[in-house]
Length: 71
Image (spheres, helix red, strand yellow):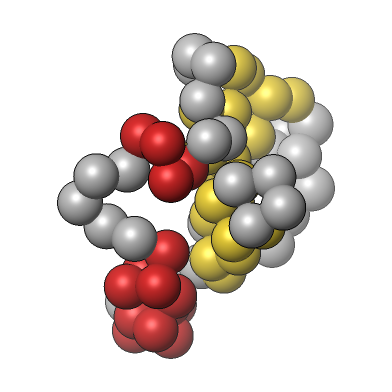
């Protein structure tokens, strides 16, 4: 898993797998899920992250990314 935050757009991106996306589904104004050719989710994009996240800041999330990657 790779976690990236883009402060200029306030976007959080969670790459769950290193495969190409063949389609995306917009869940709502803030959440997009990318899928591979077999329909498996491979990435999540959260738009306006700081506006909708009230419990977990990016500063808290990024240091634990290596732990999540090894899980």
